[in-house]
Amino acid sequence: MGSFFILGGNKINGEISIGGAKNAALPILAACILIDGEKTIKNVPNISDVRVAVDILRDLGLKVLHEKNTVTISGKISKNTISKKYSEKMRSSITFLGAILGKLGEGECYFPGGCPLGERPIELHKKGFLELGFEVIEETEKLICKNKNDNKSRIGANIFLDFPSVGATQNIILASVYAKGSTIITNAAKEPEIVDMVNFLNACGARIKGAGTDEVIIEGVAENSLKGCEYIVMPDRIIAGTYMAAAAITNGSLILKDVYPYDVYPIKEKFINMGIAVTINKNSIAINAEKPIRKVKIRTGTHPGFPTDMQAQTMALLTQAEGTSEIEENIFEARDKHVKELIKMGANITSMLNGRHFIIKGKANLKGTKVLAEDLRGGASLVIAALAAEGKTEIKGIEHIERGYENIVGDLNKVGANIRFIN
Ligand code: UD1
Image (cartoon, rainbow, N blue to C red; front, side, top):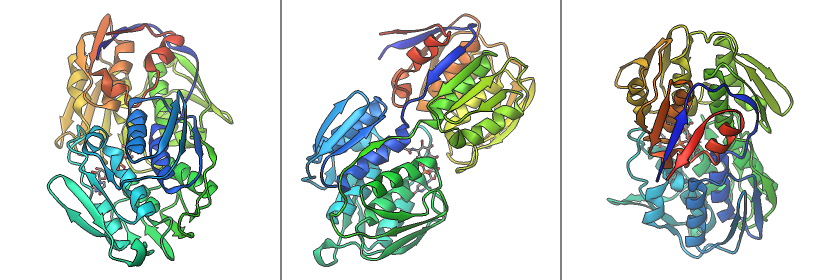
């Protein structure tokens, strides 16, 4: 797959435009299964996870035209099973099951398989499907959802989630759009990407209220009544945060254009606590990190808490803070693959509570070496650390980084980094 070679020490300075959000584009592409007529989705990041999503849609029988950042979808699905080869490639393939159930009233998917972030159970997805009236059967490799109702109809339900899971919230919304009556999700996830998926569904004729709050109400509409539209995916708040950390670790300054600043508030607050100047404008964020970075304590949480998807990148930044910082990872049980690689580069990080609590002592002298990206955001954290390291860092496992960043090399080189991709 090749490697990134990064020569550290250059200051980041300039302007980057932020593209569409992976975590909004994927459920929006899944939602297209529910909708008749042509759908044109713009600002879709051209990343490997999106290419898997396009393969899933084609495999289900839809006609998909994928040109750079635009995906146009037409036709109808002709089968109700997500093939094993795609389920294995992408964990969020399970979100396509909710849309299949919403459209056809029955469906199957293979288990997404192991995950570098630890055990990732799906009992909340299953609970949602069960309460919507599906018979949920678990085989060794497969999840099968059958439907004994007349005409395989879906029936609205009141569903309480004991944890606000993003994927389960999306799956329940997708499965209940055509349900008879209303579905109420209590303790729903509030992430902005859920709001974006719901805005798309509503633009196509769905009646969903409360997205972005902890109670989402889906009023079922007539079967197959949703009609295609053109939709622009929201900007990626995690890419924005990643580039903010990249600029800050080099004591640089950066303007991020085409962002929704409000969605970046939880990240912005911590950056301000670190002594970094952050200025918010209508669709842009400017940061200036000329002053020394200050230590902070961070607890990841569900939105609007600090996003777990920014934990690793912020940890890389905190290796350069004055004093001792702490990070508590509260969402995933094993989101720590980057820690040993950062330590290889010279970071002083102690991991406690089985990788849920980290003590980061700054300011460390990072040195370039060979490191391995084992997951998407952990990989991005190594890019950030390498920008501040003395000498050359080689990052392997970059296919993980390319799952979520369309052009991290081009973007950062444009603002002063020295990164080469060598195959
Ligand atoms: C989504 C995002 C991911 C982000 C995460 C949390 C996408 C494609 N991915 O993942 O980038 O890190 O939200 O913001 O949008 N859980 C259960 N049982 C379940 C479902 C989840 O215990 O049935 C647990 C998970 O194991 C995990 C936590 O809940 O520890 C969060 O998972 P969830 O919110 O579902 O995240 P994803 O939708 O998988």
